[in-house]
Image (cartoon, rainbow, N blue to C red):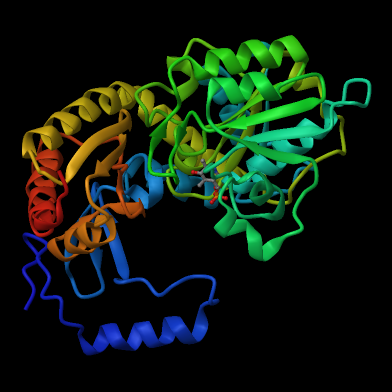
Length: 414
Ligand SMILES: *Cc1c(COP(=O)(O)O)cnc(C)c1O
C-alpha cells in the first residue's frame, strides 16, 4: 500500500520495481550503481516514482532544477524553441545563444570586457578553462596548474586531473601533467603561487566534499597572489552559481573579481549546458578555431538558459535563496537533533555536518519517508532544493528531516 498524499512508501519492492532494476543492471553501464527508485514525473518541488509515491525534492538533480520541475516558463521556452530551431552548429549565430551570453555577462559582472564560451556540461566548462590556463603561458614558464585537495571539478580526463579526490582518479592515471593539489589554507596558497603558475582552480564552496566553506579571507588572498604573479583565478561555480548561494555567483559575496568562472548545473534548469565566462584581459586568450563543441550553445539549451535567468529575476529567486536558506538553517537548528554538529554552505546550498557517520542511513530513511536529499560522504548531508521553495516546502522538509534524523539519533556522538 502506498499513501501518495504524504509520500510514505511501504519499502517493499513491487514486481514492477524488481523488473526495472533488472533491466537497469542489464542495460546501463556499470559505472553507475543501481538507483533505489525510478522517477516518472515532477511538478514544482515534488517528484513521483513509477509506483505513484511522492517525494519532496530537496536535491534538485544536484543543484540543477533551479525552477523546480516542469516550470511553465521553462516548458514554454523549450517547447517554442524546439518547434522553431533546435540546432544549427557553431557556423551560425542564434538569438538565444547571444541572449544568454549577454545575460550571463550582466549577472556575473563580467560586463563588456567579458566573454562567454558554451559547452554542454560542467566538465566541459572546466575543460575549456584548462585550455584557457594553458594559453596563459607568459614567457613560456607558466606551466603549473593548481587545484585543491578534496575538490571536485568533473570526471573527464582534464577535469578529473583537477579533481582532488584520489579515489576517483587512481584507476585512470596517468592524468594531465603539470597539475598539483594543495591544502585549502592561506599558508599553502602563499607557499605555492609564483610566476610558474598558470592558474588556480577553486570551488567557492566545495559541494561534493560535503558543502565545505573556504577559510575566511581565502578568495581575497588567492586574488591578491594570482594578480601579483600573473596566474589566473578560475572559480568553479558549477554548483554554487545561478543564484543558489543567495547571490548570482558565490564569489560575489567575497569582494573579488575572478579571471574566469565555470558555470553549468542550474543554468538551464535541467537542460544540459555548461559555460565558461571570462573577465577582462582573460577574454582575449582564446583565438578563433582554438576551442568548440558541436552542441555547445545550441538554440535549445540556450533558450532554456534565457528562460531560467529571466524567471530568477522576475521572481527574485536570488533573494528567495538567501531568505529561504536562512529559514532552512533555523528550521534545522530548531530540530535540536544530537546528530547535527554544524551547518555549512550558503543560501540554498546547505551542508549538515553530523556527529556520527550515518549520513547514508539518514538519506535512505528520508527517501523512504518521501524526502530526497543526499550524502556526499558519511558525515555530511547535502541539501540543495529548487530556488522556488516557500513556507509549505520548508514545513514539509522539517517534518520529514526530523523523522529521518530521529530514526538514527541513537548513534549520535557527544
Ligand atoms: C557537478 C560539478 C562538476 C561537473 O559537472 P558535470 O556537468 O557533471 O560534468 C564540476 N564541478 C563542480 C563543482 C560540480 O558540482
